[in-house]
Length: 242
Image 1 (cartoon, helix red, strand yellow):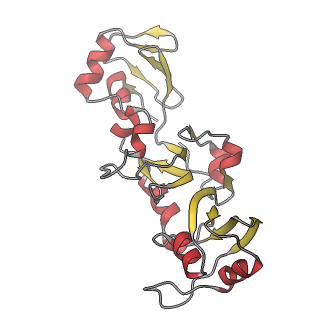
Image 2 (cartoon, rainbow, N blue to C red):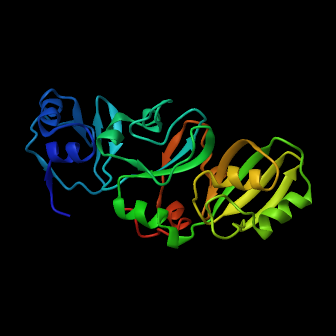
Image 3 (cartoon, rainbow, N blue to C red):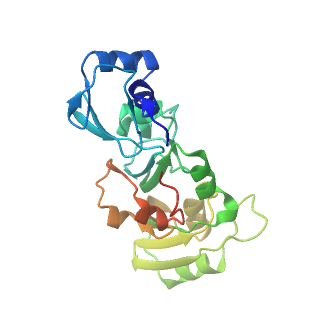
């Protein structure tokens, strides 16, 4: 990768316009490898570059691959209408980089949500033909037994669907908690499937995407993290990070 001027590097990382980045540098707010740099024209090899802005450490990333433990009451939209947007949970720099959620979770649904500014990654993860399995835990409004599990495995008929929709897997964790695995992303699918099976979803959380689990990330609600190569590999994207 060729060298870039420091103002271009900061702009690519979401620190504002070129003019704004130059002002940060000339104001002595940027340090590279512990040394304050005040000439924005100074060039660096961006890959692997460690720097600080206002004393906060950052590392250059050509693209962002994030996992968020989404709390309830947030919309997966850059222009939310009734609730705060998930972008308010992320650093402002990520908004400048136009980070987007990979698919969506309803405002009252919690759990694992992927985000990225890499269009190819978003497309690959969300394309219907990919059939990326996703696992959810639903709290039921009414106690259930094995009959509900069997209905979901056999397939239930949803309005506007030509054929019954079946879960990849389903199991009761207790009479009021069911785990469901799907490889589709239809609108309100888990909630609609449970309703079609004669129950109701009182709360819903996504616990796994592909082989990447929320538990292994150890994120509290509202927390996020960067995904590394090993974690991306669990999504079938081992060669994505650059």
